[in-house]
Image (cartoon, rainbow, N blue to C red; front, top):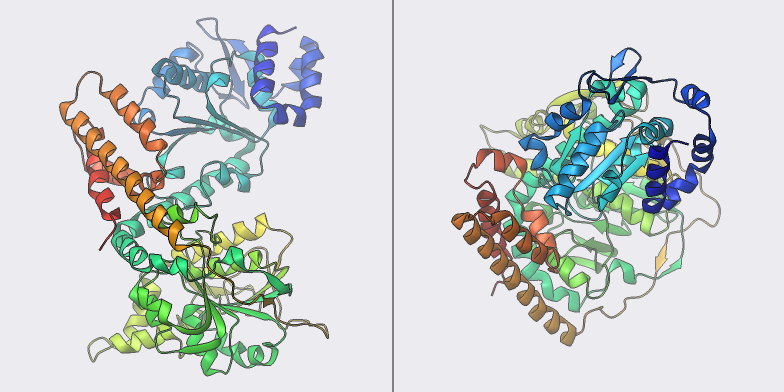
Length: 596
């Protein structure tokens, strides 16, 4: 019997018992197989000794490792500053695993227990072949080890990204180093190319999130403090009790194709639950349509401007506490709070459970989709969700967004120019609509379409339809001209208003605790800056102790969100490098002090 295999598979079982059970049949066969059977099972590899007598391998005439000294080659590969500075290292394929083992040894020698190692391999046999021929004992000692073997490509991102918060340029895929060699991925090129595409999309999304945070952090924080007392008066999504269910929901965006469906929506509004983005509200009200729910999640004044002066006495507004303060004076049936993706609200939410997380999809329409799911949707119909510019238009005529273009227009900057700027400011390109025809879209719209595609694939129990054939085609969404109703089709009905979840006493106690936790964060970061400026020989250990304190703080999400991106660090060189990191945090953290 192969002693390397026995040790490796025993360690694998101890770390990943569920995975071991999943591949029990293959493992049992390998454990009892003869050398001849093993050669046949792993025939995709040509195994031979390197010049230093270590094993090396070829696959389809491609050398996976050095023919002279694969261990030395692996050490040279992982001893790069770019790799050493990352919180996560991801291997897309790995051959025998020399680089994986070398990286694991490095983490163990440096006692870097906070770093994560993720291994991605589409074919279980390639993974088990590596365990059969090379000693992986150090790899299985890594505390934060993730083994993704045989996982669908669209599920890989959940290992890297946190879907419950905003991932910025300092975390998720942006904080990871992706170790990939063509020889390691050639055996399943399509799979690994798909994974790489998903990674690049998420990197772009995280860079957008990071830039958005840099631009709007001060506004989010200011609004949150101004609105904080609203949690003592309003109920939350998670407090909604559904009295009469309806499995059909209509998601209404403000795209130009909405205009074609206004008469139809008015005709069916008593039979279906209508949920709209705030930019579509004016067009709906002008057409005599009262949506059941309106979602507004943007903290800017312009988002509030979309509903300012309107009245929707039959509609319920859903929003987080970070919206523009005047939003809470909107004339409607009720205002219900949803979860916020920013630390101030999250801290208060954690004391009473979540308000109702609508996710971070990049657009308010994605939040609408998540809301429909929470409300029990089995079918979601899209209208006005064009994600493109049919007939070269950006929004439905008469929408609040179009009205904004008119407000800011002038003789030298007519409304047509604002519309054109909106279309061409985000790298325009062509996509395909539901008719199979070309439609003008852009990179940002395609990012939103990809979010819907991913979300729909993750929720196969929900059927999705578009009522607009001219809209950008989203895989997983079918075109339907009309909705089929039964005789008893009706809207969803929620319970009457309940008391707010926060009492005066609990609110006061939470305020005091927030200030205590924030002061602790500030003291830790100030100490880190001081240690970096002294730059003693023991700096790494000193900073590690500070990091341990930061990780136990209840406001640690502030650190995650406010941490400088890799682009920032690349443009701010200091000695030691950590000084720029903590000085940036020092500047950001004071923004979270309660405002009078």
